[in-house]
Length: 262
Length: 346
Image 1 (cartoon, helix red, strand yellow):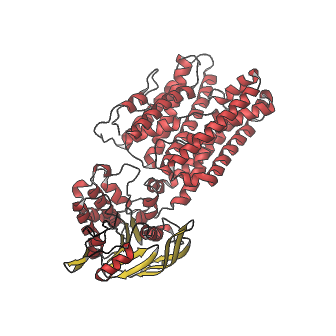
Image 2 (cartoon, helix red, strand yellow):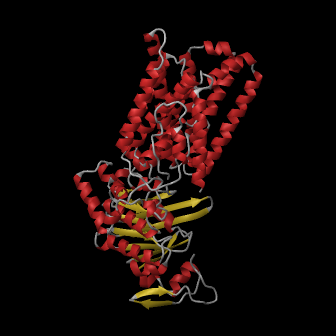
Image 3 (cartoon, rainbow over the protein chains, first blue to last red):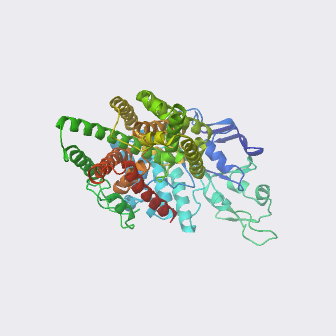
């Protein structure tokens, strides 16, 4: 029972955007996929989320091949939250969370389903917001509603694609804590794509760093976020310090060339 | 979106265009209206329209008049239901509510089919063909066109909206100019007959075709009813729908066929009624503020039928058949479409 990526590749024309030979993510904790833009981290997540067909290879989540297993069954095993989570239709927070039950209920909520919806809304303090429409909420609140919907989906695995995009510092901080809770309080296996290496280093248990579609580094934060490690990823000599026992890359300092990440 | 008042379908009161007024109202605070209330109101409007249409100013043989009117009513209800349901499904599929299946060139294709047929066979010969065959051929060509289009580029266009709209405009324009070219080649007398085929008319509808269309549209509705909950999830967009376990791509591939049939059958039955589906579906979204298919499909179908009946009534009783219901619907629908586009731009 784990996420197993085997020989997955994806190319657009001549450009290989993803070429991961082997990657296994054991159950539990938060694993962050990091790397420069175009390194293939979102592509890898999309393949695992079956939003994108790989050219070769398989991804198995808890034994289910995401390309061939019934979509509904996968949806009871893994939920996905994307950076662009705007929905095309008007939806209240509660309706969104109820949709999280769809893989179990088929759209017809049982009493048990309603209980789960209730619990999920309460778990993320959305009780007083539940009848508000998503487009009336701030980015952070909307992300919280989506995380509650993910919780309602009751899957063992959660994939998140840059959930902090477009959020300010405070919203990003809250959202990361909520994501952390998915792993700590609700025993989910969380895989998250992040472009901020410091947020990844502080909130993830394991970092998988990609570069040019391949896994370049893989390990706990203090092994991956080092000056040498960052040079491999970004071609920049970045000083790294330690705060709260976690590495912090000082990418904002002036040093010849600065501004590694976009 | 704008807060709305009144029903879009209103009563078939002459000269009133409640839908237009609706949409042009500036956005206000969201008023919560239960879908059931709207369904009741629109259903009532439909019944009133039916009652008025059936009974107003009957002269001569009662049974003859009633039968004729009942047939017209049935035709309008079928056309309204087919086109409105197709529009709702198309919005679900594309995630955009100002699109209409018309945009992929179906109406223009119908005009082209009719023009080419008249030019090729001669108007009189063509009209003398078995109506069932003409109907079947027109439906088959339109559905086949959508399937080809789907295979070539619609699959991608569903996620690439500008491509879809552009492709539709280009194809529609091409069909229209081809039809214009053909029309120029045919005899003016023949053109009069062709014109009759090109504008939706409910006056003379073949009974058998009515039954066939009724069955096809009923089957379509039954299919929609069966998968309505999945359709609600599809409306959330591809990533969310897939994440929730809906087989998005497969459902959409089937949906496009259903949409093609639901547009082709009414169009082949009475001629193109551009904008009707768009008008009825958007009025429904405004009134119910819902995207759930068990709400939007029945309400927009009833709204579309009511609208057609009202237009036909105004036409017959007040304008003395001086124009066609599709022209009234097209006129109102065109204005609403522009309003919707402008509002989307803002």
